[in-house]
Image (cartoon, rainbow, N blue to C red):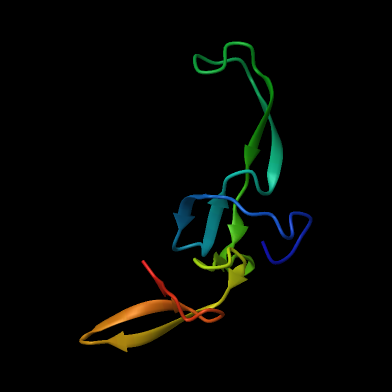
Length: 92
């Protein structure tokens, strides 16, 4: 995360909402959702879950150093590949 109260946290991306330009990241932007008893949650109550964050607040981690980096695109043969701007390493 680049901004907000979860700045500096890292996590796995669980879902990407392309049309809304948002993503849900594991353990980031946690909210408390009040639920009624249902078949899934027989007890009901307050459930902690992740809320979406805007994609502009996310960075990929550099494969070499594990620190946040921007990405670039370059031609490698006849294919366009993504690479980390900090180390120049190709991102798969």
